[in-house]
Length: 449
Image (cartoon, one colour):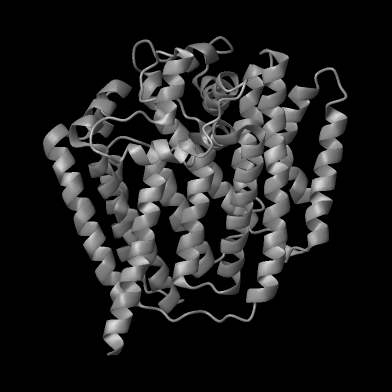
């Protein structure tokens, strides 16, 4: 798969190119572009190493690709900021990327060697089906409660305050319960693929109908992110449990999903009076709707870089939270109103835009907790987790390993933009996922008696 020498080979090439880039007068801009292009550079570096490297869902590609969009191309909008901030905005994610690559590739090498003898675990389709219906019933009741209380927020005009008010009326817990339908579907889908490699047309139709229904009830709250999670995880499970997709198809599907998700948000605000700051900013370049959409899409990633830049400014002289980010997140699960990290950062920075708070991003979480050292620790830990779960899943593609790897990958990818430890929903649904597999194991033991 991946040798230790290859990991340092990649890091050496990245370090060499980035060092050369910084010798130019406009070095930080070139550095940001390089971070954005790093997956493509790695692709060519490994092009002669074999097909094993070209799994688009592997931790070698998926996380660095999104990280490149956010902290590479997304940072280009802020190149005229104070040079100290620009250097940290580009340099710190680069350091984090190096630590991620190094630890992830090292762990992948060692774990695959140790676990390659494991065989695929047995399937539990009947138990998975029962679990699926339980979770789907809970999610459907939660969706019904939301519709009765506030209607369907996804049909609102794009007034963010209205959707936030709707969420406040029903509480975030109702939305969390709607989203547990994802967990049941992942386990059920992986179990179906695990038990039967040749599905009948009626079985395929049934999966499509279930998929469509779950998509619909999760669109009701009006947020795009969860739909991305659902699509990505379902495609990853299909890839690892049923039919592998080649790199070109996967990239093609990924671009299609991104266009659809960005297009949804763009359409909601482009045609309403006043639009938004980003639409107005994009229209300085062109009045063509297609050109405006392109610029607006790029600006979406700049929004996330802005979150990280704001945290860099607020914590310039220290005052780190030292693990307090997750503590703030846990506090939001308690009764009453507690501010999230994003809300605290927004208020301290003096922003007045509509919405709950500023997206701290995964780098912002890490920096708020411990500065550059925090970034090194966070990214090394993510590399270890991704490396272990990926290696175990490749060596033993059981339902649990495939679903766990897919879910963790999605959390980390989306957390690149929103923040990871600062988002309570990730921890909540991970707990539901692990509890679901615990339910399956207990049911198996009872069945054997």
